Amino acid sequence: MNFAELQKKLIAAARANVPGDQVPYAFEKRVSALLASRVAPQNLDGWVRGLWRAAVSCVAVALLCGAWSLFMPATTSATDLSQDFENTLLASVDQGDQAP
Amino acid sequence: MERTETELIAAVLKGDSASFEPLVQKYSPRVFATARRYARRESEVEDIAQEVWLKAFDKLKSFRGAAPFEHWLMRLTVRTCYDFLRGHQRNRELSFSDLSEPESDWLERFVSAPEAASENAAAAKMLVGRVLERLTPQARLVITLLEIEDRSVKEISKLTGWSVPLVKVRAFRARAEMRKIVSKMAKDKYL
Image (cartoon, rainbow over all chains, first blue to last red; front, side):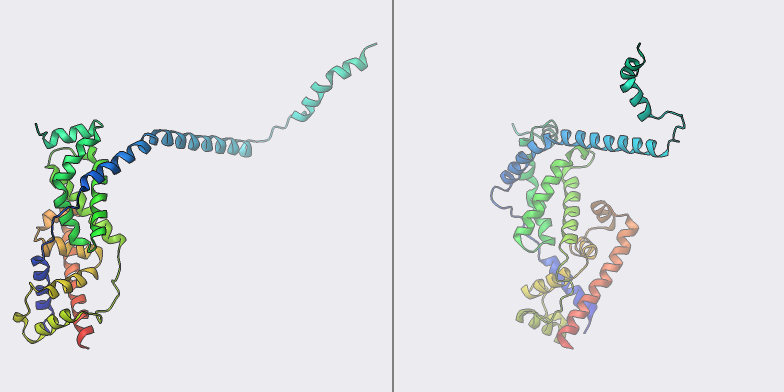
């Protein structure tokens, strides 16, 4: 069988078969209705975009803080925060004890 | 007074979406005719056409007016049809053993006397539909535009966004792929 000839015949058959250009009834109305229904959600797009940006910024700040607390060298002062806090809280009691 | 295309497009871009309707009405026949080249079922054709118009509305800002609106729309249509083909790759591995009687008759007529098998026969149209369905999306697009619609390589390059050398390479591969499918069809039938 001559495949090249068969291919030519089939291409010629496809050429002869010109597709119709008929459009379903009220197609343009359907497209308009679809577009109108999409306009309302599109108004929310600005908000959605803004909130996403805010979320990304928050994550970035959280990561920076985390990295800072992890990689900053530990302070070697004699008194740590808990000791300072306790001294401040008990300062009035200490003063009461020392009073004559 | 009827508004011109440019006025309609400008109105749509200003937010008057109702002005889009006359454009849909005017160009839908071309969009549907193109979509029917790639989709068989009418529901699929409608889906493609709808997708084309929704994309056209969304991308209207990118239409600069340097070329006619129709050209811009046809580029969008062809690319949407290509996306459709890529998303609906079906029946590509099926054999040709299930040919209908008229299709088998047409093939037999071709084998006995090639000139007697008319390309206008309904069976030939059905057969070519089967062959095209088995092509890869790229090959089908190239064969349709180059061989069936008789467009130039340059035109295809503009429509698809592929470079001219790429269209030539894909056309070469598409022809080879089609030849392979046609020979498989004949072998399934006669071997």
